[in-house]
Amino acid sequence: MKTRYLYRNKHGVYCLRFELQSKPKNTYRQLLISLRTKEPRVALQHYNTVMPEVYRVLCNYSDSLRLNVSEAPNVFEVKRTIRELVARIVETEKDPSISNLMSQVRYRKLDNYLDATFESLDLTESQLMALKRKLSISESRERALVTSLTSHSTTTSPTSIESHPIGELVDDYFNFKQKSWGSRTATQALSNLVRFAEIINFETPSAQIDGKLIQHYVNVMTKLPKNAGKRRKEVTTIDAESVAKWWLDLSVSHSETVLGTGGLEKHFSDIRMFIKWLHERHYVSLDFSKHLEIAKPKGAKFVEKRAMYDATHISKIFSSYIYGDTLRNREAPKSYHFWAPLIALHTGMRISEIASLEVQDVCYEDGVLVFSVNDEWKSVELKKSQFSKSKKTKDSLRNIPVADAVLDAGLLEFIGKRKSGLLFYDLNLSDTKGLGNTISKWYNEAFVKYAGIPKRNDNNTPLAFHSFRHTFTSLLDKTTIEGQPLRRDESFYITGHRDDSVRTQTYNHGSYSGSFIKAYIDAIDFGIEWEHVSFDKFLNRKKANVK
Image (cartoon, rainbow, N blue to C red; front, top):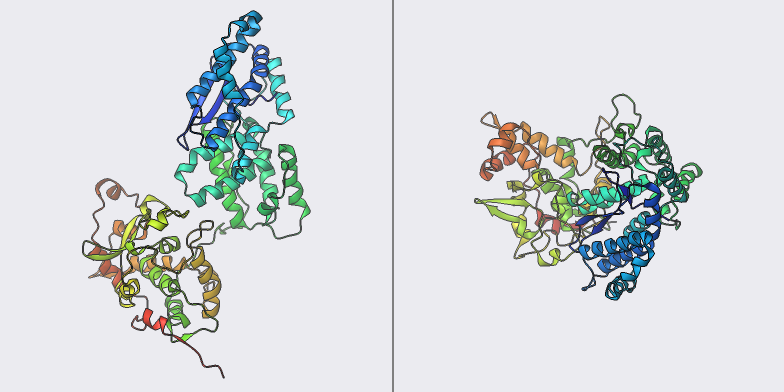
């Protein structure tokens, strides 16, 4: 019999503990049902007797939520049902004749909950894996718990450590953090957390996590191939030990390219936060998050930061075929090919912020035309879509004045009479790799190749679309008007960064002058003239004559 729901409270009384999802999505309630004993043997006997019926109640309740059954029992009815089951078992074991006193009405009520059947629906892969992790407890852990209950062992984890299977805690942590994550971040984090749990065996009690187990995870991760995630989908077993062995075997049996330091760091950063969370809640004895670090040469960094474009790079980009007179052979021009680099350079906006711009986001604020960076779709069709407009942080929400160079290039003419929809009507959004993935792929893979833009600068630092943001921020900080630079809090605001200074956090209440900031944006010296940059010119390019 599985024993994952058996819990001993601070008074020494054994209880059944469950965490159930309420009908309002993403809300959970914890149920504690007393077994009315402090004796381990008696508690285990009650547990083994009552859990088959309790499992049926829990499964039926879970199915009713998933199928959205209108007359499904609520959490309180489930709690009352389980409590009655426990009371019946406890009382029956004290005096078998007492079970005859149970009314037929109560039996009928229980049968209605226990025997209800629902049409089965396919679960998504992540839901199915979570359900399997919750319902799969290995025989070894069961024997260990039975031994500890019957032998009154005091040599296990300290009383201050509350041990639970690591797979169960992964689910708890994900549910706790999910509300603060965007959809893309949540999907990636869940994948990384599940892999961690599977590698170390998701049935491992949290109290057994130590430096050696963390090092085992690191050793396996550093040897896995890049496509390990795709291979995992082919594995059908749900046995924890078999899954852990599969990961170990894969790490030593392949001959493909392994994850680089950047990819490993993305995995490790999520696991470090998870382990800190475990330690804060006394699920592990020590904070082992520092064990998740990759040995690196002195001065090396895990993630190479992008460099800014210099005047030579900017000149080459904005004199390329996109901004010239000739249409490249076999080119399929899109509106964002012209606008995305130009807007990025003059606003410092992130690529996802540019991709999610709507026509309504180009608006007037206090008489100044701005790009409104916000987190809510305004167009009806986008509100109904699966795409999320959420931003990196709340400080990313801002209004950026439109530079004269962008206006002179024909921005308002490009919008024309359109009232809603994406600013770049021919852009295909991506909900798996970020809204800006289409722009990123075009620029970083195609445009720089055909335009002859280097991917690294003279110091061997990477150059990419994000370099526009570095360029704007660096040059804005250097720009002065009458010898005065832009104020610190205004500079932080316009680039979507958080200014943690006491002055800004305490005394500034969001009063920024759009016209004042616009003057500094227009004063930035990029080292080139912008008269030749025109969207009308972009549309009227012609193919070169081929002899």
